[in-house]
Amino acid sequence: MNTIIAIQGAEGSNHHKVAIDFYGDGIQLKECMSFDFLVDSLIDQSAAIGIMALENTIAGSIIPNYALIDKNNLNIIGEKYLNIHHHLMALKGQQMEDIQEVWSHPMALLQCKEFFKKFPHIKMVEDVDTAEVAKRIAKNNLKGIAAIAPKIAASIFGLAILADDIQTIKDNATRFVIVQTDAPAIDETCNKASIKFQLNHKRGSLAAILNAMSDCKMNLTKIQSLPVIETPWKYSFFVDVTFEAYKEYQKAISLIAIMAENFKVLGVYKNGRPQTIQNSIQD
Image (tube, rainbow, N blue to C red; front, side):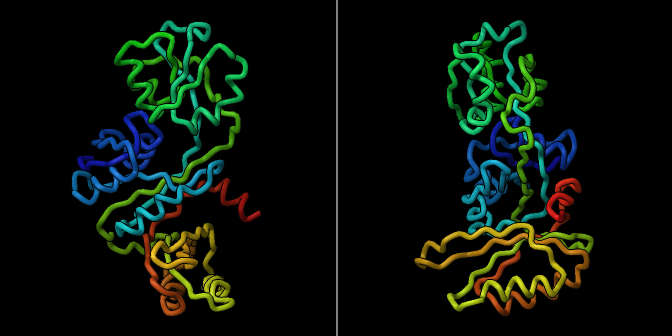
């Protein structure tokens, strides 16, 4: 694939793994150390596609990313749910007793805190990105330093895995969305949509929207509210829905567009949620 894909973080990160899972090997990456830079690369056309984390089963919604997608009129063209695994890695030949410090993103350190209670001699140091730390250890031959990063980073940078799956909570997943600036052609095989709208303060206005979705056989999978900065005490609602028939989706959004204010379709795409998770929600 020759299209340049912008990811948040470095080669070897979870964003990189999602790009590979979605588009296969041989992709061209543009590494961005923030989501703002990622969006900028789409706007200035130095990248055609972006991979953005949107929510996590532990940390919840990444609210600023909803605002970035909306403000910059990005189109969601797909999604990927990735189980998050944290691995401890260092230079080959290093052992646990050799490690004095472990560097990683603050969230990774927090999610692995229980593991390091067994190693009180190791200092935990916050850094900018999991994979970037792994790359730095390999490039600078840093002894006594370990990284918490995805296993793909150890493979790419030639590091040794000292411990597998060191996260405290084993069932941890992140939802990533694939975005671009252009609206793709409508694919009627798609079965999920992300929409955004605002409502006035009339009693029952949100309930009326939800009833319209239910009447059109749409399944609400996510609802997130964000304040409208320019208007105090007014909120935008970001909603994800799944559906079986595209015509039912069309009927629903035609109704919602009439009932709500500032209605926008953020994307229509194929549901990426694993069946096992879907079943647990339906049960």
